[in-house]
Image (tube, rainbow, N blue to C red; front, side, top):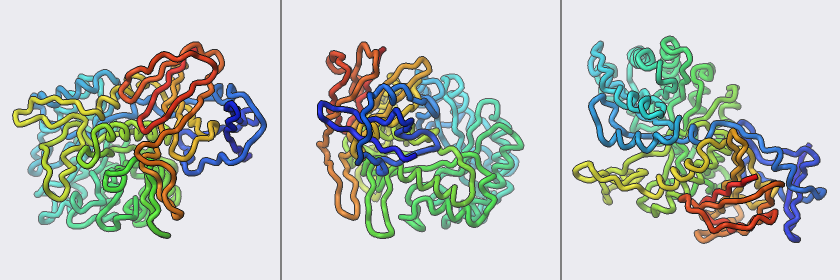
Length: 494
């Protein structure tokens, strides 16, 4: 049965097809892109109790989705910056730290093992209640041909991975094989999908032999590679074509869904020509799932093991807004991990080809002496969101019921105690570009929404992006809201 939902605003009469059993919105494994919302027709009048009563939490709690693609020291030696970083994660049990634990640090020469060079970050995670997503990364001179990392000897790399899984299996259950293998920067001299597939097959077998309950991820791909720049995830497709049995050799697909040049929003989709589209976060995720399905793979979890925006060409407040919107969409789209790149800014360089690389941090540069601790708006916003929603799981996209335009969102979340919250925003600050031209929106976009409240609601708290509460509102059965590009969280008390 096809269900179409809309809103008629004659005093805001909500037309929800609850009586027909229509499940508007989407959850993990059944994602409907915002672009596909169909709200053009009306149906029989129905009160909103139906869709409020059919909230179905899915996926992980938000605090177990959130994480950081860190560059912390992995050494067992004391490190104040690492200690400070883990202290920020401590309020959120299960918060994920993803970092590379490199082959050349572990086995600098054949048979010379140094686990102390990579144990510090693991020990710090366990002590602070975080978990480690362990990157198994790169090569070492003695185990490759010449100076090209992509010639790494497969059996040597697999043995390094086996030893790592054997050493850390008690506390580390997540392993990612290589970082951005679709870039020559990390897989020299040129990305090679077939050879990476061979590496993954050998490495996964080695990890599973040492840690049978480990989950192994296909190494996080950059959304734009340097062989086919606009063929998003084409590296994955070519690897699956080269090795048809590859699906069985990874448990999770890792993605780095950076938007175009890291200067447009997570929702932004841009038509360039009949064969080229620049995809936003949701569209990139759907594309990856489609590639897996087309190759005959069973559905696999997806992790974002890197994503982010730099506060170089963008303001710090804009980056904060996009970070929280990205996290909300991650939960809505059934993705299991969201790892922001990265925790610290590096030295504030403003010259060179890619100076923005220095400005992705949640905290500013530590300064010449390493003692500066400046929190940036992105961490203020993300931590404030987790303070309110850490234990909540995504439950429903209310957009279809409310007749929201594309890229305007009201997402319902529910915790294990049944507490309901709605995250709402107008994500049209970077309007989509279609074949017919730009869609509505712009930097000052707003959307006036009247949110019907669940029966029995006694009070409502509305907080802004940074957790600041709005003035108290009288509960009248519906809540007027002006949505902006900054996420508001509406907590409902019944």
